[in-house]
Amino acid sequence: MPVNSFEEYPMSWKPDISNITAPLYIAIAEQLEQDIKDGKLSPGTKLPPQRELADFLDVNLSTITRAFKLCGQKGLIYASIGSGTFVSSDAATNKILLPTSNSAHIIEMGSVLPENHANEEITRYMKKMLNDPNFSKLFQYGRPEGNAWQTEAATKLLEKIGFQTDQPVLLAAGGQNAIVGTLAALFQPGDRIGTDPITYAGIKTAANMLGIQLVAIQQRNGEMTKEGLLYACKNEHIKGLYVIPDFHNPTTHTMSIEARKMIAEIARQTGLLVIEDAIYSLLKEQPLAPIASYAPNKVIYIASVSKAISPGLRLSFIVTPTSLRKKIIETLYNINISVSPVMVELTARLIQDGVAQTILEKHRLYAKQQNALVNQYLYGYTVLGDEACIFRWLILPNKFTGVQFELLASKAGVQVYAAERFAVGNAKPVNAVRLAVTAPENSAQLEQALSILKDLLESDGDYAFVD
Picture 1 (cartoon, rainbow, N blue to C red):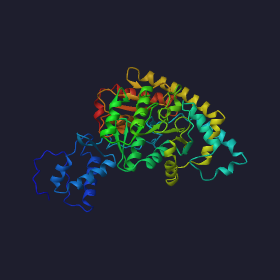
Picture 2 (picture 1 turned 90 degrees about the vertical axis):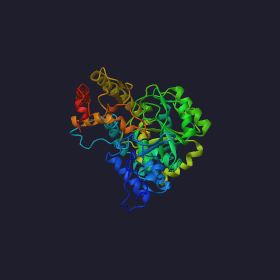
Picture 3 (picture 1 turned 90 degrees about the horizontal axis):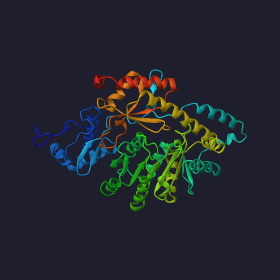
Picture 4 (picture 1 turned 180 degrees about the vertical axis):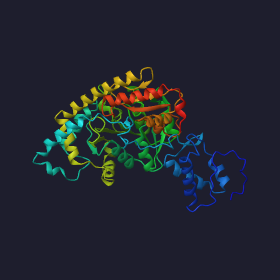
């Protein structure tokens, strides 16, 4: 028992370690995690200083430090230099964003999916491949390097989004796998990587799994500032930076050319490694030059076909500096994040024969049609996003938080995702939800969902507090 009396001490968290069985630091970490999950510690709560908590529990300071480190690596708490340690904004949210399995009873507008008509074209094309006399040879192990024909197709596709490179292209089984492989290859547990304050949930789950801490970089007008990035390099000791320059997920923002050049300049000056996630760049009709074109020796560029062509095509392309290429290849091999030769060959043929371009154009047209419906039904509300973007960012009236609106929408039959799911560290998200506008099965279903969302938005707000 602690020898000091803290009965009246205003501490935000007073764990009980009187009946522990695990090592002390693990028991404290587990209790902190459980109290967060149970709602006893809400997002944004400032935890007691480590020294004071150690004094309260009558344990060594190193025990508290180790416990906090465990929870920090899981993304449950966030240490801000000079401010203290806080419960992360997204600590109580589900970070794994997958389509609902109960699709018959709920309209999917949570998971970002392109329209599914393209899958019929891909199926017809794949049937033609079955008649190829060499088709059976594709049932072998794949290699991250691919072959000349396949990497030529990848380079051809990248040129359509303004990225011309003489660097060899690596292959991975989807954008998320490429991100995981890159993080595992180039960073260690305990390393810190900068991101936007609101960012793609997949980078958060990958970082948590690998014990990497994400640091929110100061923004102005939706873009990282030079001052904020330099501060994070110097004071937060970040070793990497993760960005989505085109159709940022979830805010839909497209990074300015000035911001791209600024990031490239700082990467060159400081040695910062930049992971440029270009997963939505193929959807841009007039894409800007990628960050990688300004700092090719400091940027790992990842493009994927899952959102632009079909989710079932689990294939991504990685353009990496020569000095890092071997590490990434070895990691992709060791954790078996490789791609099926069948999938690679199918995608290469779709690109080389122009089918991929036709599908891209159809996707853009469909997105424009769906976004026109969004603009019609949600007229008068702030709904951010380009007409070719396959998701939108709905800023909610003050009477709702994102979490409340997500719950209400789900009960009404529409799945959307709250801003809290995308928050990094102790960043306070705006009241907003992401709407996946091409995920519904058809336009009629989208109209049904939008009608439901509009009714919720126009309600008097009492519903926002329903448990």
